[in-house]
Structure formats: structure tokens, C-alpha cells
Amino acid sequence: MQNSAGIREAIRDRALAEGFDAVGFAAAHLDDEARAGLSEFVARGYHGDMGWLAATAERRGDPRALWPEARTVVVLGVNYAPEDNPLAEAENALAGRVSVYARGRDYHDTLKRRLKTLARWIDGCWPGALKLFVDTAPVMEKPLAQQAGVGWQGKHTNLVSREFGSWLFLGEIYLGLELEPDLPEPDHCGSCRRCLDICPTAAFPAPHRIDARRCISYLTIEHQGMIPVELRPLLGNRIYGCDDCLAVCPWNKFARAAHEPDFLPRPALTVPRLAALAELDDAAFRLTFAGSAVKRIGRARFLRNVLIAIANAGPNGPPALVRAARRCLDDEAPLVRAAAVWALSRLSPPEFRAERDRRLAAEHDPLVGAEWEREAAEG
Image 1 (cartoon, helix red, strand yellow):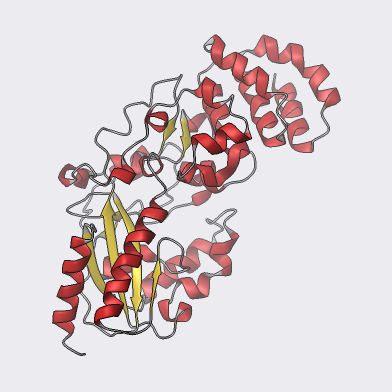
Image 2 (cartoon, rainbow, N blue to C red):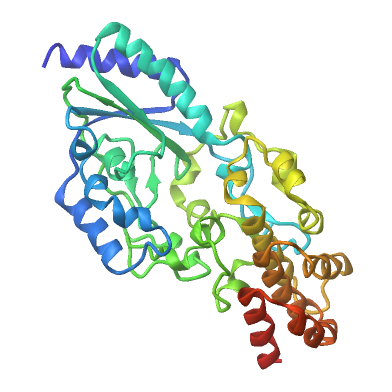
């Protein structure tokens, strides 16, 4: 190893100067436990609709399967901790909750820009092949971050840092240069299980195990169809992601609010009004969420989430929410119409029954028809 310690510290210093908050070095290798955990996750079907997890499982468990020349992974973190408690709006029936990570600009763009700057500097000092990734490489980055000493995977399976709590975005630079790794970060969760106990949908079958099919982040972002009916009431007013298991971690007491301007919340995504969101057409959706992670799920899935949150306002909900649900019964997207059926049945059963026969007879999409028929059978 050519002056490994000196190179590592130079890269670490430069990374911190470029705005990264955490830096660690790991060998380009994942241990057997991490690979076994991934295999179990896929074998149990916990990945749900995320078929790409199963398709890339072999590469995901081995950095060198992705890039054989890799010898060292530089793991870099940027703090995105919120200023306020992200659980504060849980009881606001008129507003939706967006996960903290998605309230500002899409972090992928910000981190990739910063990683490219650092990578150019590294290449200028020690020319050689390298690659960079921001949540895009089919390799498990959280186990790599633990190996690099950046944090450890908590019982909620997310990374936890003694300095930044649960609020770190991760990116990696793979180097062909072999550098001495940092010491792994040991697990500091102890007997605490707050993250497991707060989960509204019981998505954790055991500590350090998650069933994505029950996870609100998966259901509102990755899942493409209607959300299972038994889980819909448990979403509350969450319309994009969920922060509950992150927010209750005791290690957050050491976190400091993020200073990166790109990660500061947009007012429109801090306490967004559900009735207004339900009115967004495709052009307005794209404009409202330009540069945001929310945009990638598309209008139909987003409005599905909004309508479920509207439904969870309960019977005799505010008139503005009832009107929003009725308007969406005529939406061009079947997924939105299907969600509107459930929302109207929950908000105003008399209006639902008045619409039911006429709408069911005229509906040709099987997804929407199934919602009308199921709600008719139940009520």
C-alpha cells in the first residue's frame, strides 16, 4: 500500500472541505452475514415489487462483482437532519406528510455533483480508475458504511451514526487503489426497540429485518398498484415515505440540523394541503415537484397516496376533502379513480352509495371496478 495512511487522510480532509459530513474507508468486499441477510430478504419475498433487488442479488452482495478492479470504497455521508420533529404533523387531517429526505431538492443530484468534484481531485492526485455511486449501484451501501466506520445498521435496518443519528445521505467512490480500511462501527442499539415498536404497519418481523411489503416508504413510493386495503388506514396522512422509525431513534439527540441549502424543506412540501394536491394535473404535478424526489413516482401514484390520506380523515371529513375525492372519481388515471372510490366510501358513505350503481356500470377498468365492487360488498 503506497503511503496508505497519508492518502486516506488527504482524501478525508478534502472530502470534509467539499461539504461531506462523514468519511470512511472500507475494503471492496462484503462479509458473509450481509450477503446471507440479502438472500433471506429475497427468499422470503420481502422485496415485494422490487424485482431488481432479486435480479441483481449476486452483484449487490459483492462490490467486485460490480467492478472487478475495485479495491477500496470511500463511503461519504451528508447530514440531512430536520430542524423540527417530523412527527409533529401526524394529527393534521388537512395536510399530508412528506418524508424529510424528499422535502428539498433530490439528494441524488446534489451528492453526485459533490462526488464528481471529489473524484476529479482524487484522480488528479493519484491517477487511476474509479467509479462513483449515489444509491444507484447494485451493492448494499449500508453494510459498506458500517464496515467503513460511518455508522451501524440499526434494528430498523437503516444506518445510525453516533454524530448524526439516523439522518445521513450516502454516496460512494470506488477506487482501484488499495488503502487500509477504517475500523467497522459496532452496533450501539443495545436493548432499545423504539424504532420497531413505533412502526404503524408492523413492518419489522424481527430486529434488523424488514418486510418491505408492509413498509409505508415502500408502499407509497415503490409499490405501483393499489395499496392493500388492510394497510391503508395505517398510512394516516403520509403521502410520500415515512420517518417514524428514524425520528424516534435516541441517537438523534446528537444530530444537528442540516446546513446544506439543497436539503432545506420547500414550503410546499412541509405541510402540503391535501385538497390542493388532489387537484394537480400532470403539468402542475411536474412543475410543483421539479427537482424533487417526489417527481419520480409520477402523478398517479402520488395522487393515490393523497387520496388515501384524504380518506383517513374519517367519516364526515372536511367538505374540501369530500369534494376532492368526488372530483378524482373522473380522473383519467385508473389508479387515481380507484383510490377516489375508497376515499369517498370512507369520507361520505351516503354520497358513495348514491354514486355506486351508476359508476360501477360505466367503469371499464378492472382495477377501479374491483374497488367499487369490494366497497359495495362491504357496505
